Amino acid sequence: MSGLSIEGLSMRFDLPNGTSVQALQDVSLTLAEGELMSVLGPSGCGKTTLLNIVAGFLAPTSGDITMNGHKVTGPDAERGMVFQQGALFEWMSVRDNVSFGPRMAGKSESDWGAHVDHLLEVVGLQDFHEKAIYELSGGMQQRVALARCLANDPDVILMDEPLGALDALTREKMQSLVLKLWKETGKTIILITHSVEEALLLGERLLVMAPRPGRIHKEYRLPFADLGVGQDLREVKKHPDFATTREEILSMIWDMEEEIMGRSEAAS
Image (cartoon, rainbow, N blue to C red; front, side):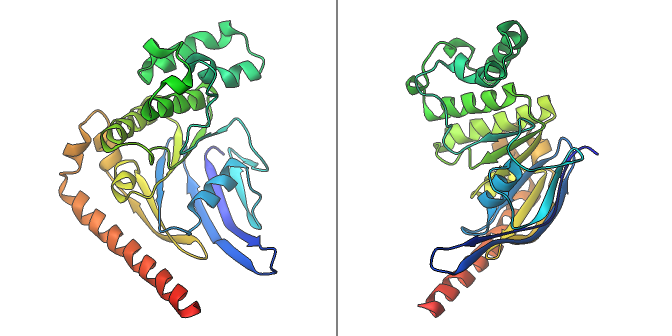
C-alpha cells in the first residue's frame, strides 16, 4: 500500500516537575501519493510535533504511522525534511550541499551528477553551483535546501515553516517554486505554516489544527494549489472563494487564540 497513514497518533511530553503536556491527541489521516497538504493552526497546536513524528525524529506516546505499507520507527531517506533555516553546511559549495546525501550513500558522481545538476537548474542555481552557502541570500539558501532534499529522492517531503524567514517578494517566488516542484516531481508534500494565505495557496488539502491537546479541527479540499501552478499567485488570490475561505479560517484561528488567552488568564 503506497502513501502515508497516521492512526490514533498521540504525544505526551512528561516534564521534570511531574506534570505533562498533551501535545497531540488521537490524530488520524491518510495522505495519498502525490498529495500536497498544508497544516495550519495557532501556536501550541502540535504542528511541528506532528511533522517530527512523521519524520521519525520523535516516537509517539501511542498510535502508528505507516509509510508505503511499513511502520515508521525512525528517520529514513523515504522522508525528506526542509527546515525553516536551511540546516546547510555553510562552508561547502552549493553543489556539494545538494549532492551530500547521494555522496554519503556511497554513490559515485556518475550516478548522481546529472541529477544534481538538473535540480540546480530547476531551482535556478545553476550559475551559483560553486558558491559557498554563506555567500547566498536567504531565499537562495532555501532553494539549496529544497534541491538537497530532492537529491535524496524521498517519497514524502516534510516542510517546517520553510519560507517563514523570507521577505514577502522572495516568499511569493518560493511558493511558486514549491508548486512547480510538486507538479514536476509528483512528490507527496506536507507543509507547516503560520500563514493562512500560504496554507491556502500551497495546500490542495488544508488541515486546521486545534490547540492543546493538538487535534484536527477541520479539513479543506481546495483548488488554489492546482490553479497556482504556472500562474501568478496574485491572480489566484483574486479567485472569488479565496478571500471567503481565508476569512473563515482566520476567524477560526482567532477564536482558538482567544480561548487559549482565556485559559491562561484563568490559570494566573
